[in-house]
Image 1 (cartoon, helix red, strand yellow):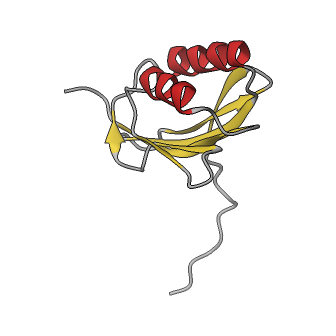
Image 2 (cartoon, helix red, strand yellow):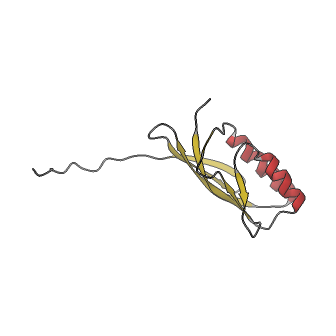
Image 3 (cartoon, rainbow, N blue to C red):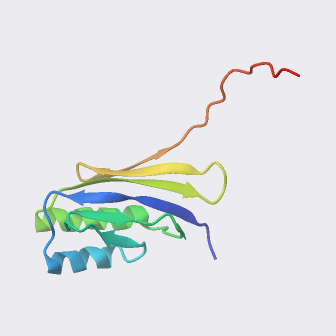
Length: 115
């Protein structure tokens, strides 16, 4: 049991990782569903199915550390929708850093509802 979140996004590499490096990347991200694109440059993360991925920031920083060592640059965004309303947020990987942002819901002005 735990708190579930739907993760849906991707991380793109500046060049296609080797088969050996792709296996290492898959091991780093073994806590989340991933799928390589046909060109081998983009890694789809999550599939919109509810998951518990508590160590997402640690995993992404491990990925960044590996990519720095292996000579890859990565960039990407992952949309996140938690099981409780309005738990909406996003993850961004850019410039070897991981960022997160929460969504804000703003109410518009009230308008009269006619009978």
